[in-house]
Amino acid sequence: MTPPCIALIAHDEKKDDMADFARLHQQALAKFRIVATGTTGGRVQEACPGLEVTRLKSGPLGGDQQIGAMIATGDVDMLLFFIDPLSSMPHDVDVKALTRLATVYDIPMALNRATAEKLIDFQ
Image (cartoon, rainbow, N blue to C red):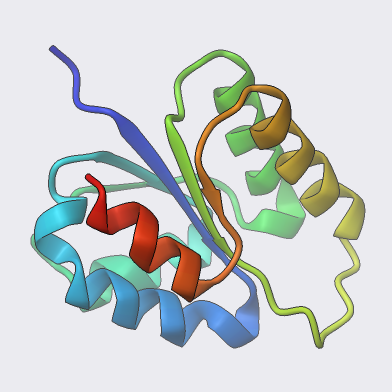
């Protein structure tokens, strides 16, 4: 049986937070297939060399849309998206589309570390 898939995304100002989260929850994350947008995936791999992370395109270059498509096809079971609400995002429409898809397909979604901590604790 294939393990569930978790998608990891973090805005630039939240990438350190995502890498730290991954380091602290490496054992729990190891139970998942992990997909991540490009730079976030690289940061998680640096922090946790033992985790296998499939890196997609960078968010602004289509990575958010790739993950959205995976949600729509049932290939992503949980989304952890550390959003920076204080920085403007040129690809804000992609971010909104991604969070809308996670809601439409009713998958667990965390938009900040506090919620991600709760979700990962239940796994």
